[in-house]
Image (cartoon, rainbow, N blue to C red; front, side):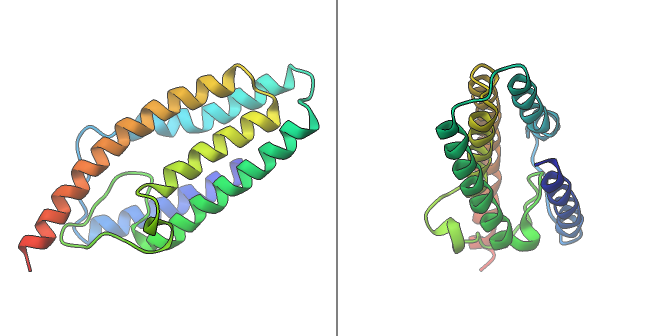
Length: 165
């Protein structure tokens, strides 16, 4: 779990630097600083709770593995689809059209749906019946705030793209 986070962090950092070199802009009001602490902390809290409980039922573990795998798959599909545009931070290059392929054909924010799947999957696998719902609710609130900031930034970049044609 944490190994994939290291891979994601490296990729995000490389892409962020590339986006900034291309004129990428980061909006005010993003909750990234809090998210970068809260994201791994939610997993750690759920795993810690699981260590102090009896193992969850096999059905919960199996469901958790499926949900975690589906969440990871959706998240990585979004990452691969965005390519060098994917970062942990919101960094938007003006006058670049939105990606409309891959999972973005059906979902506006598939990466975030995948993240919620990861959280839910780990909660089920760990049997984190208290910290799981709390973590999903708290991190979900951060995601909603982030989506508002991101949507505002994407709308601004989209308007710039349309007026420059």
